[in-house]
Image (cartoon, rainbow, N blue to C red; front, side, top):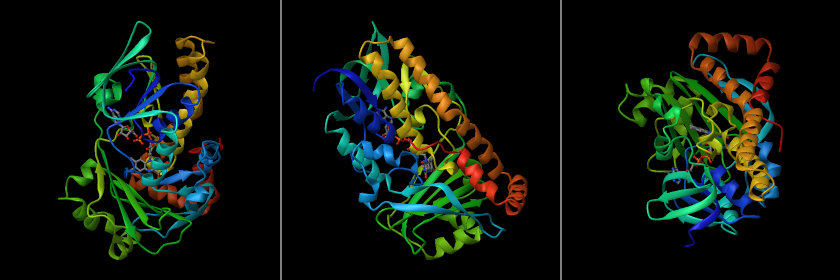
Length: 369
Ligand SMILES: Cc1cc2nc3c(=O)[nH]c(=O)nc-3n(C[C@H](O)[C@H](O)[C@H](O)COP(=O)(O)OP(=O)(O)OC[C@H]3O[C@@H](n4cnc5c(N)ncnc54)[C@H](O)[C@@H]3O)c2cc1C
């Protein structure tokens, strides 16, 4: 394998794959991920419609892939009747197994893939030295798309990695009869769960829970039975739905702390730059969009029209202008949802002014790109 590239991307999730497709139009690109494709990933699998047309420009038409049109939201808490609303922008139900694989197939048309793990990247004499488990590479610009948390964050001593990350997530696919166009969001003590269909007809149950509420229970089954099932809708779901996999996917140490979009002259993409609270259903679209911004802001540098410092500054400014507000609103909403009194008050208010729910949802999303 050649050792010198224009762009090296650590991480082949949504943001890394999108960046690989875009940059490889004009540059020599290597993307590196320890996993092979296709593979399941932690996610609620609700993809906001704001990136659907953009994906078409990459040659990916989700309507041709049987993605489900998600148009309505049902929100429940343990003690209340569901609150329903039409999703202002709507989204697609598509599994990460399928979506990441579609992007991967596009990416390897022009970019090179290495199944490996990036251990370190540092800038020396105006180029990046990138070390993986097996190789040493150099490149003009290094992009980090390693998701919520990785050993590279530790190596770079990023601020958020020093903070506690008291969240964990659980995902399982089920066979279950539910409305194709519906997204359910169910509140339970210490967390919330999303339920919706994906392209193969399976229903995805994915939830975020605080470590404090989870640690009182032995395992996922126990937590589902003791805590999730206190919500009537989740109780009905868990009693009737048939799990498709033997074990759920679980991850822990999820951090929602603020991050920076550029650190040590490395461009951060997707969750590496900032993770929006999952209840907003916008992380996937933001990951894809951040790769588009990186391509637009860095291409003039790669073509010698501006220097690195200008390009990195342009990326950071555009990233913040595009995403900072929705990240902040996401933080506020999650705070409300996890506090019983605030949730009660919020629901009381929303029942009187139902159109407000659409306005809140809109504020966590961007315009179509
Ligand atoms: C519980 C939960 C539910 C969610 N639900 C939704 C939802 O319904 N809708 C939505 O839009 N968003 C949702 N999100 C957010 C969404 O999943 C993420 O925002 C999105 O996956 C970010 O993509 P990414 O490219 O940044 O990272 P990822 O897709 O996580 O990819 C990161 C990649 O980096 C690789 N990697 C890690 N370390 C290294 C290394 N050292 N070297 C090389 N590669 C490495 C990993 O293997 C991985 O493939 C949810 C998040 C959570 C936690």
